[in-house]
Amino acid sequence: MKNTIHRLTIAGFLLLLVLTLVPNQWVGQDARAQTTQSDSGIVEVDVPVQGTYLRTLDWWPYWAPGVYEYDDELEMYLETSDLYHPEKPAIVDLEANGFTENDKVMISYTSKLYFSGAWDPSNPGDLAEDEEAGVVALFSATPDLKPIGELHRVPGAIDFGEDYTTLHTYWPQNLEDLANTLATKGITVDRGGDTDIPQDFLITPYSGMWVQVPRNAKYLFLCVSDVYFADNTGSLNVTVEKDTDGDGLPDSWEQDGIDFDKDGTVDLDLPMLGADWEHKDIFVEADYMSGYAPNPLAINDVIDAFAKSPVSNPDNVNGINLHVVVDEVVPWKELLNVWTDYYSMKNTYLGTEEERLNLNAIQAKKMTFRYCLFIDKMGLDPKCPGMAEGITCDDFILAFGAFTDGGSREDQAAVFMHELGHALGLWHGGNVKVNYKPNYLSVMNYAFEFNTWKPTRPLDYSQASCIDLNEASLDESQGLGYSEVTVWRGPSGDLLRNSLALEIDWNNDNVTDLSAKVNLNNHPDYPSPDGETLKDYNDWANLVYRFRGTRLSAASATPEDYHIELTTDQIEQMREEGKNIIVVSSPEPESKGSGLPMAVIYTVAGVAAVGIVAAAVLLFRRKSSQLPGK
Image (cartoon, rainbow, N blue to C red; front, side, top):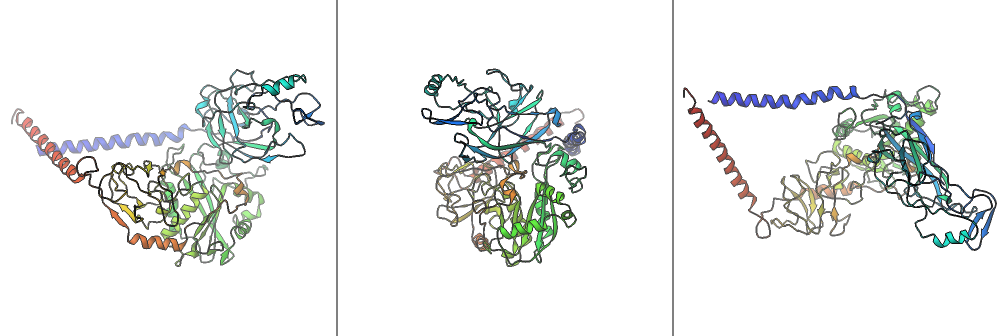
């Protein structure tokens, strides 16, 4: 009997092992073979700043540049020629530029666009913020501008990219009175209505949008996202680049290298540096002052964290390849001027000595490599060990001279990954500035940047595993949504940490409250308002890889962009406070709770489990004894 049970157990484990391993092997063998790549697929296009929303109409009593006269009745300038015809949208021929069905492409733009820039030709108007100067895009099967009411959109294309409902093609105000006035002058205005499609997708500046070319899409239409288009002046440039793995590096660069001046010679050999067009890559060059060469173990810890990340890739292997090239020594300066000295050193030392002999190689490197300096101290604050140029940028500083011991391996890894996170678009609360959130388990969060308060904290960005926490009504039975250890401020301001369990006694009253009120992230140095709803954020899924074309990539950081990080004094205070942290056990659900104490529940469950197993064994023995020969 015992031998029979033993054999069945072994057979079951072997079967489970086979079922687990075999499918994974099939996926790994077939993944890369099913993917093909050929064309370079990079195009830049100038978008008309006085264009329409994907169609063209005679619209407003505004004329092309020429002789202007001021109309007192209309209180505006009019040109004495034919009616102005709005410019057509920019139209990209996808096939002619190397884009085919299912290609992953990054669409981004840079602009210097003036709104209200042409009503008075002597006044250039107001320079639009990049968030305002958006670009509406549309996939079409034809390059023709169809009449009003006919759709351009390719069926299914709305599923590619973020849905965006455009405003009216014309001013949303009622133009009836103005139209009647114009009619007395013999001018007819087609007031129009909504755009020719119910939804398009809106491109965000710089970081852009990663979309997939849908079936039957032959053309891409691009327009300014502005209903007041007829008075715009300036420039708008859109880049469409095939980027299969979505890391902000075009496939052609990762396959063939960058020929910056298009002379047939590769100026920066990205494949030789480890680039893979089917797996996300991030490149960083690091220079350092004498005595402050980065600890290679700390750098490897960060590289390993990226490699183990849950980020998916076309090659079906998760993770990000972080390439950190530690290059050379830069001149010593005890207090580095932020950012003047930094930019000067970057302009001098970016690239290897060999690369600096080729200006095109340096230009290519500026488009692909983030840059950091390991220094002694920053003049802005000698006790600040790290600072990024801004949120989504290409420059950051590691000032490990701020630590009395130069920073331990753990310190260096934490600060390096934190500042790199800012360069990749992360705030201290993920997508918000809110800090110390107990449900945001990320190295970007000051509470978990170092392993001071939570010794078991991994060197990691958040994967958005936690539930929302409404500080005005905390359900302690739910904790973070799963069993995990975190750190927060109790009602009296004490620093608290829970044991590994689902329930968390947020107000430390040893009762499972279903509506506790606690300001969980109210740190003395970073006060936070009561009653916030604290949200987790998926850092890994929202990294901004592409920095080319951003304002901060042009070495122009201002105090509004960067911020002073934790100082070494604050870090030491955190370590001292961590020695006295109060470990809160799981609450007992009594009068204010719901149900029995957990100890009783666990005991009953254990007894029940033992009883079930015993009954099963007795039943098996009884059946076996009834078999022939028993």
